[in-house]
Image (cartoon, rainbow, N blue to C red; front, side, top):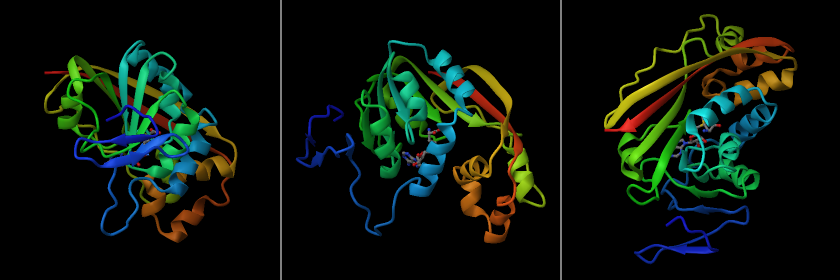
Length: 249
Ligand SMILES: C[S@@+](CC[C@H](N)C(=O)[O-])C[C@H]1O[C@@H](n2cnc3c(N)ncnc32)[C@H](O)[C@@H]1O
């Protein structure tokens, strides 16, 4: 179902048009009319922040873990910042539940096939990819297992305990660390982990607000707490990521 002409047709006869940006929307409208996934504000903030290169080191470490010449699914690919790095040396497919995210992703990566779809129902055949990337996106071990071939690898990226701690400390009276990560995954064998830790210096209010707005914290924080960042123009922030590699059992 991922062979993109201008229209796709499934075995049940449903047809799905390719958008002008180049992605295809495989989600049927939900009854409530509620939007899916990250919204415009969050996606625009993530694009603005990532385009400044603050996560470039992480992106390189993921590229090293992935390697080249593979068929790769970037699951929950967002606006394609990471996807674009892997697409020159691999055959890459991207899915995300957010149409707003894929509008950017499809423009950024003309050599990638993108579909608006859920990680709970990945529109790929069994055993059709060599690697699945899950970078800060929802988990779906059963589906990841299904679409990976027998030698396939799952690569995940998650925030570690002190990730963004200084940002939280600037907003909340009692900032908390992230909980320790649970690494065991049904259907997979844990093969390797790599910690990526560094500090970035944010030197403008715009960058600080973009970072805040690309995280779920912004959306869960009261207006009065949100405003605490308005007068801050520089902030050193800890980044702590864990890259984990799994093989299929
Ligand atoms: C934190 S963002 C990460 C995006 C991208 N991987 C990155 O790191 O820049 C999580 C992404 O998962 C997407 N998402 C949330 N629920 C999803 C689902 N059920 N199926 C597919 N994507 C989903 C969101 O729309 C969002 O783009």
